[in-house]
Amino acid sequence: MAEINKKQYIFDNIDYIENHNKIVNFLMFHNIKHTVNNNGYFVNISIIDDNLINKLYDLIIDLNENMNDSQEQQIYETIKIINENDDNKKQTEIKNKDIRLNTFSNDDKELIIKSKNYKFE
Image (cartoon, rainbow, N blue to C red; front, side, top):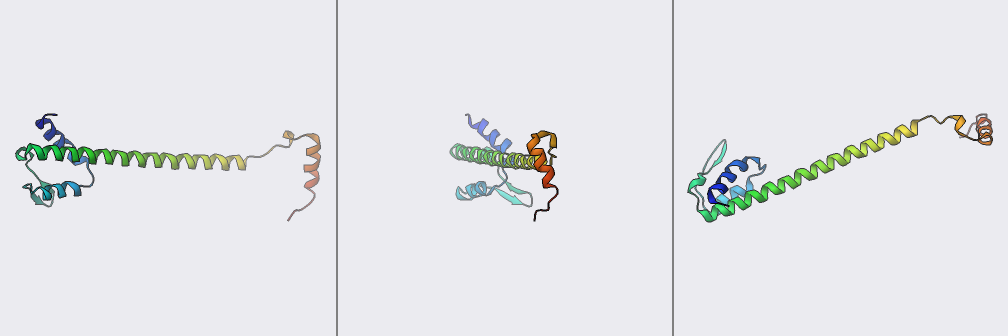
């Protein structure tokens, strides 16, 4: 990919990264000139050496992919929890359903009716 496209990619995608520690460490390690204020770190990427742009580009791609994997895992876990809750709700609904006497055979009906005369503790 052309260096200009990599710089544009860095510019367009750096805001999507939640944790910038690795990028800050990259800046410090390579002694890349930057400024810092309350809004964050600012770097003029147009003056960074092409070799470092390639490394920074790879780092941002890696961080974005890891973030996407993490988001996918969170979505998977959320779906799993929702499905488990739905299954539990369905099981509770089944447990709470009335069983009609007419679903039993005549012999079973007699036993059920007789059992109502006794208290089981």
